[in-house]
Length: 106
Image 1: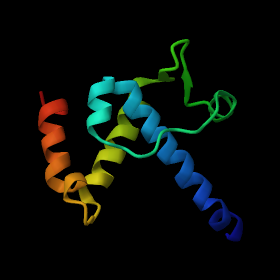
Image 2 (image 1 turned 135 degrees about the vertical axis):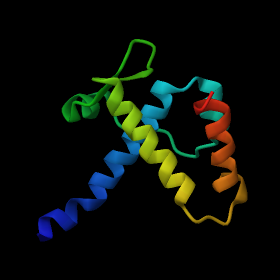
Image 3 (image 1 turned 90 degrees about the horizontal axis):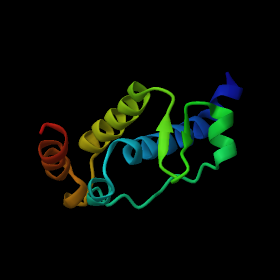
Image 4 (image 1 turned 45 degrees about the vertical axis):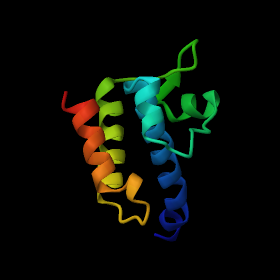
């Protein structure tokens, strides 16, 4: 049990990295930029290959082994952002609700 608790930060990091990669894989650059995410994926190509869920193509754009994996990671990221309590109103509920309407429910 202690080993699992020690690895929990690694799992969270890998999940966040895949969420960011999925956003880049499924959205156009201007849509991704509109989210104003401060962090970009830092996983190397070797790390991605070892994990086995995604890779970068020749242009550097992420590709997942199956689109539903990318969709899952994007959905999880957006739900987390929508439900996160934040003092920054720009990245709060109204911002992500607007993003959904403009870019997802089109």
